[in-house]
Structures are given as structure tokens and as C-alpha cells.
Image (cartoon, rainbow, N blue to C red; front, side, top):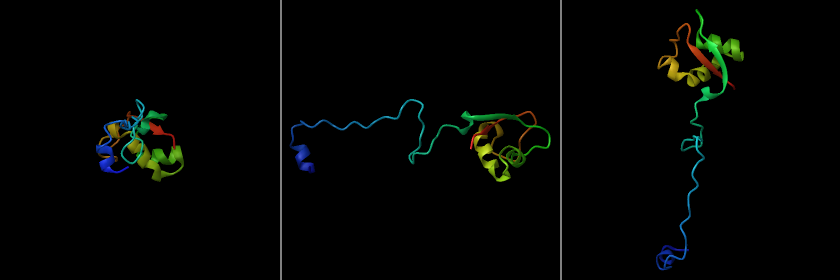
Length: 95
């Protein structure tokens, strides 16, 4: 079907409706989830001497996974992942 066919067709074709995402389903343009990772996982209270890498090492067995903890708790921790405070309640996401 060409452009002219559509314009001269007197409207007997109905427009195609674009499906809308389900309520609560959050994805960005690339299909990545925009739902916070903190929605599932264990809770952890920061104690003296903790760092995100120490928590990751103890919980996941890999200190390099501190990024996942930080991303899941960015709203609590703030912009500096090196500054966590004793007593903060963090969510340790399921990996």
C-alpha cells in the first residue's frame, strides 16, 4: 500500500493502535527495566567499618558487586557510594 492509496481510500482502513505497557511495567526505550532493583532482596543494616565492597564480599562472595548494591540504594546513599552511614537500612538485591 502506497501513500496515495491511503489518501484516496476514503477511510475504510482503521488506524493501527499501538499497545500500551501494563500498569506498573517500567521499561526504557531499550527495554531495560526502570523498576528499582531494591524492590526485591534482603535488608541489611550498615554497621561500623562497613563499605559497599565489604557488604558485597560478605553477601555475594564478590566485592566487585558493590555496584549492584549502590544502584539499588542510590536514593538512600546519595551521589557518593563511599559515604554510607552506620544504621542505614540497605536492600541487597537478588542477583
